Image 1 (cartoon, rainbow, N blue to C red):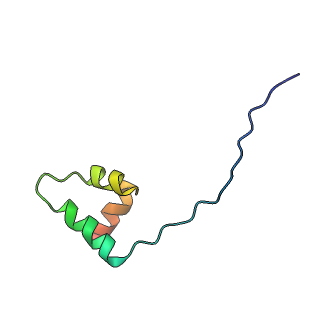
Image 2 (cartoon, helix red, strand yellow):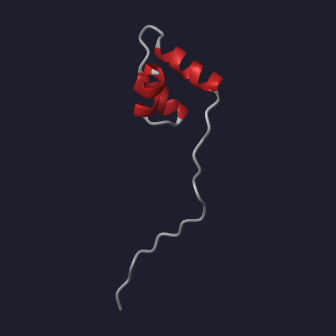
Length: 57
């Protein structure tokens, strides 16, 4: 008998909606001296490229 690993997905992840204030707060944090964009993105639970997109907008 062969055993197979089965992955059970119990929920659906949905896109998070960021308010303008949340975006502005995160972008402002990237402008602080010595700020790390990757650390800010990680702590907010978003991908670095998303935060860079907000900064350049």
